Image 1 (cartoon, one colour):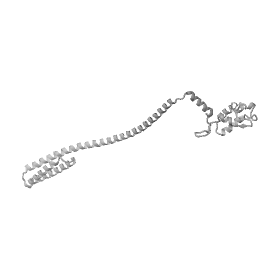
Image 2: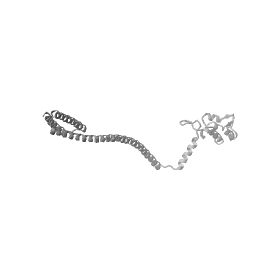
Image 3: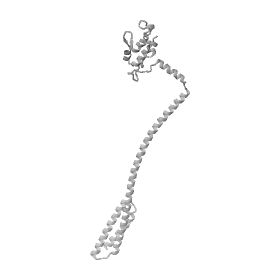
Image 4: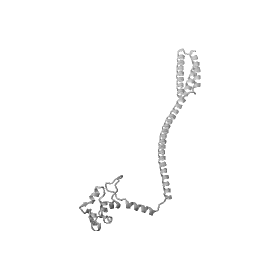
Length: 244
């Protein structure tokens, strides 16, 4: 009778538990099913032991407990299948999360590159607009080629076009003496008849070789001032035309 009363209580408890199996997470449902299987197994073993010791037949109660045990075992197997499927889904979700993180990193990298490209394009567009403005301004104030040639001739007449070997950017010296500087310098003073040749001129070959009256080596003088030998020889060769 004790076994019968305990079996009824167990049925009541199992009915309450079965009503709650649909609630909670899969883990909680698996743990609940395991607890039910454990309780039902103990109950069935106790009933079998009592029946053997007292030689009483309680087939109806044993069958009920066995049916409950089989039912809960079926529920447990279904929950195990569900748990396995959820595990696969979980792994797939983790793989997708990693893929999303990778794609997000790629998107951020592309966004950074696009910003850099945007800055470069903005700078290029600004420069292009400025150049178009300059072109438009040049078209409105166009200068004839003759004026440009006259201006270039005027620059070449008053400025040298060859730099000494030691000349560097920022050097205030001119490349070599211009016509005006040579006329006002020592070569220009050679027009004095006391130091010049016939009619105030020096022989062109002597000037080109750098041999002047009084054994003065003007090439060395100009080279020490930073002028190239070729430029000085060219200036000296033009001395007959410069000195008047």
